[in-house]
Image (tube, rainbow, N blue to C red; front, side):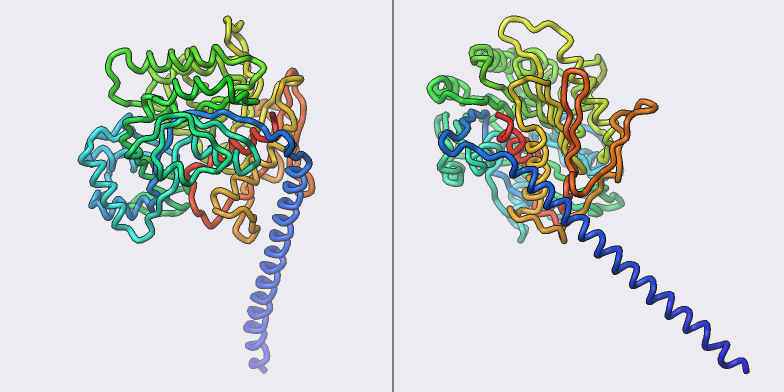
Length: 478
């Protein structure tokens, strides 16, 4: 009589396995349906606003440009025979292989974006030669300004680009882009060391996909297209002026007073621009405090709009408050934390009466892996904030996945099902709705819009992500 009882246990186990399989299948279907609904809703929000094809937006953008060599970061370190360092050290610039290993070990585990100047020409050439031996190495147009320019042109804008570019770089620019700057023979090269989530280098494991960039530029730090750009600016009649690429000045070996002179020349150009024309400054990975302080004097006060990521926001905020630069920050920040930091930065930058020619900040765009957040002053020149936030979110997926068509089977949501608008006790909590994924609300003098990102799970490249996202977000707001 015991035999039938013995059969019960295997049967129950089988039923449990079948039930678990069925539940996983149902969960997977529900998740896919949720992602599809979010995508459809974001596309609908993006398409609510279209460009006037009779008079496309005219955007002037500077400065610089380069050729990117894009490789797997771990594979390049292995090919160059640079062993993982047990020390994780932050270096402002790279002079030796040891410093490179220590710096890569510092940024790789948290998956934090970083860009460093290599002062050792022999080391940089070694890295470039090693990258060329990798089978999956590829070339791409690089530099904040050219990347943003190509995105703006792709979205239907006419663009004036300030940069000294090689014929090779110019050949991959859109026909809608006019280059202001004498051509050069040899382009500056940037090594883009990409890595995915979960990548391993020795005992280190990356928490998220990102990139570590090294360069040894000679043209870009001097913003040597500035004068040509300025001479064509008035005749171009832009609707918007965009400034980026100034991180190339970071830790560069300028002669005494040389950097300040170039920034003063930039300041004079910004001062001369009609204030009816919006001015956007795109932040980047700055590590030199003196340069950041110069930007707070010569560039940021002449900007209506700022764009940055989840590392650059606390970095700038800390410096303004009298502290040090925060080189590393949470790679997966909560919505409430970012919004509180945005409010604080917005208020600090608007707290001082602008001097002659200076502007008052009216737009702040922060792009993170999980979401896009925009803060816009009520009644300012910036319009269509909801649609612009949706477009920025969709562009994040399009760029990182390397496809204009978004495939939700290669995407995930990492934003919570609801979020608080502040870390303050009792703050409003906003539920996430798949059918209306962009949340917008008003506070005091400004409006905030926030959209989730369909995070790409099959990464094509992260480099240039912020430039594409910021550019796309600006298109619908001018």
